[in-house]
Image (cartoon, rainbow, N blue to C red; front, side, top):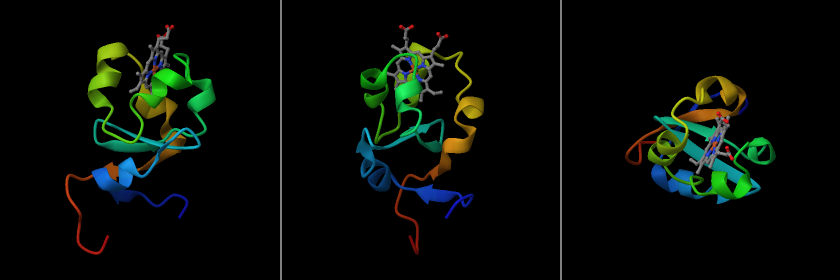
Length: 88
Ligand code: HEM
């Protein structure tokens, strides 16, 4: 499904909460940060605090200046939706 953006529910997001299968939502966008894990300047343990959930607040509290849209461009999975959408 390369290149196809998905609607991701909180439940689907939570299913990717492992270091080797790590998704995070920031400002409505869902990213697969599995391959970014070892490159995160704050380390993997810190990044894992926001994985599998909406990490917007955490992210913004720590480094609001970081341009995640640019850095994680190729890791974009889709968009966070607040409820199960029909046909999902
Ligand atoms: C730096 C935590 C998510 C990119 C840091 C640092 C911490 C941290 C504590 C400071 C490291 C230091 O200076 O010693 C977290 C937490 C996250 C998170 C708890 C969970 C939401 C992300 C994501 C990205 C990212 C998703 C990808 C864009 C960066 C960058 C720096 C950094 C680029 C270096 C910033 C600078 O030095 O100006 N992070 N991070 N972080 N993080 Fe995160």
